[in-house]
Image 1 (cartoon, rainbow, N blue to C red):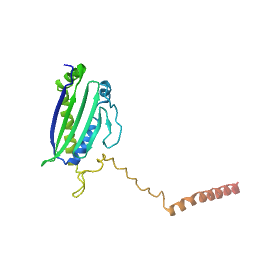
Image 2 (image 1 turned 45 degrees about the horizontal axis):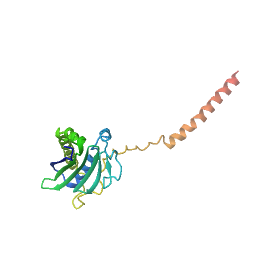
Image 3 (image 1 turned 180 degrees about the vertical axis):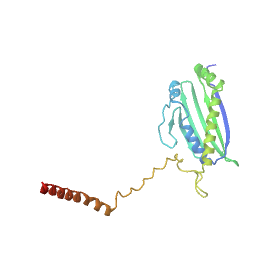
Image 4 (image 1 turned 90 degrees about the vertical axis):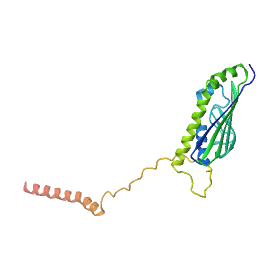
Length: 211
């Protein structure tokens, strides 16, 4: 029972969005596949995000490394940790509704520890639940972006060269400063201190003469 054991699984869903939108949704979710604490705990080869962005061949995310990237058709990730060697493949197939997304898992669990890991992760159906969750998030993300209609109009390329960044809030408008005063008013205000000084001098001289 110590030989390698292979596990294969496919999750499929249909998304009401073109492949270009779904591709960006896949990239978005791949970035957050593995929690950092978990990939360190099981000794994954790839423990942090690095490499080219947007994701391409050679990019790394916690738990995986991109080995094939053919937008918007195919994305292949592979990974290695203490108990398993595995591959996660996303295929995007256009159909009448929008895009059919397929998530293929192919993993081997060598040795006694691998067999134990398979019991904990595969036989417990934990992996099925996790994969279903990933596919569901991709479907919701893609449908949401399609409703927001951010794609180029007819005649534009089906796949943007870069997935659109989230829109930032517009900068606050700066109101034009109102003039603090009217030139004529400034001239009148400037002359007031001189008149007040003249008035004080006249009153002082009158008082002195009366005394």
